[in-house]
Image (cartoon, rainbow, N blue to C red; front, side):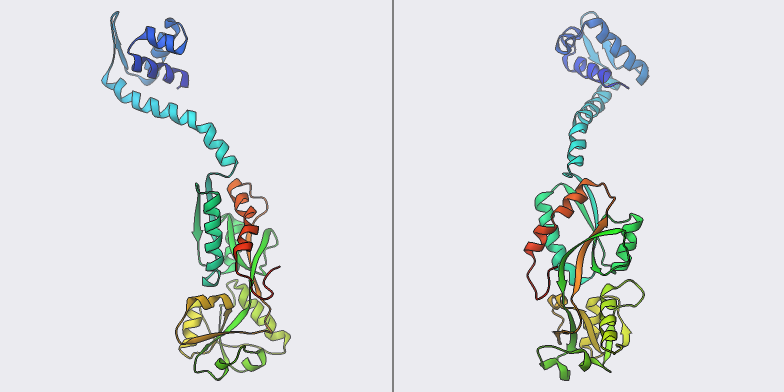
Length: 303
């Protein structure tokens, strides 16, 4: 079905005159009449009643007119939609994120992106562990993700946004809760609540490596599925939780959150596939500097 036939029909339907429609379209009446006949043959029903004195729409013509107008409007809008998509002004980004300790960065990123690309749909997916998010990125299930590094996915592009110190979560009644910090040698023998060892939790890898470098092994008595649960279990006296210090914003009652200086800060990065041609994704990546500038500075935080 050709657009020129639709346009001819709509014009005749609006003018209810082949003469006036032909003048409006700047064509002769004979080819205009042929357009209508071809359209009616293609549709399979009569759309117009025409006599020597008047033109009227059939019931089928009335119904077809509304659809024809929509089709013409869509055709006229299509080039503009394509240009906006190519410029990253519209589209879809599926953004994965890690646990509660990344929420502040996620919020800053969402606000910044909404200011610059208000018509791009940004779906958030998570929380999940960094290794799991990396796998989903590689499979194409996600377009970008906020992940803790290091991750074992060398094919991904990474932009570090911030670094969070690792902290110990202790019950307020714990003997170590009264100082400004907790040191690794003080944790020797203490029961530790950690992240799952085999689900790609980058923070768990950083913590274990720090213990090993100091000739120690963490006494992990329980693994928990997320940061919030680790903090709750610590408050219940199950053990000492080790989490990114930014988790302190969760305000779990009955615990204190103290830095562990010997454990290096854990970086939080934006990850994406380098071969992804999604213009909206490129717009998100370009906002990294703005996001970094809006995050509160922390000791040894920036790369």
